[in-house]
Image (tube, rainbow, N blue to C red; front, top):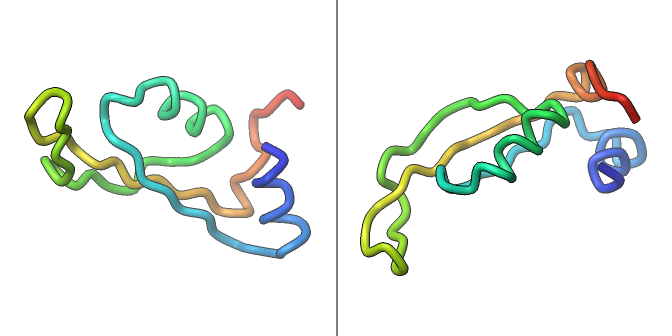
Length: 73
């Protein structure tokens, strides 16, 4: 949260984006709690060597105007 505060308030960024693999549910839930929204899914975009299969890549974004809504700091 500290890094996002810096990006939004000090660097004055209006948008932050990220990508994560579908099986990383802890990160997905954390990003949603912070205010990121799912913007798209690249189906079977990443090969996961440990499971020898392809997994989806989830694209998420956060706009400055949405940051902080519904958060208890």
